[in-house]
Length: 162
Image (cartoon, rainbow, N blue to C red; front, side, top):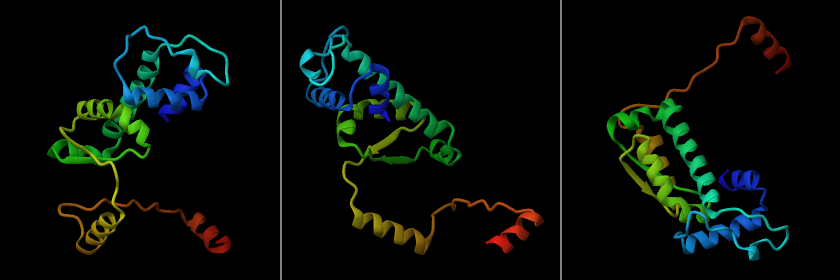
């Protein structure tokens, strides 16, 4: 989503954005008015775009995602009330490396104090934890599953047409 936002707003190709993010991964210290160099525009025409704009677009999306996750998701409210620890993994390693501090900043400002980033998910430990949850259940509460009640007419049509 972050790369797509940058591509749309700046009218850049994804290849150029990925090259920029690789450069940002190595060095994030640049002036606010520093422009993207011409050497990155190999397949398209050069446009004067500030590097800070690219970072600002990514920060806006990260801030929006953090807000949606922690303020509009009712399942997360108990995390904020009990000061629980949250583990976060970001699938795209390039995005994770470049914007890890930004994710940490916006997630911690959303109400969580303890956030750990997991670089690699271990499938074996995930399977063991899932088996433990399914066998012994949750410590305090289960996540409720809502069942939609169908009307009489809907049930009749479902029984006839499957």
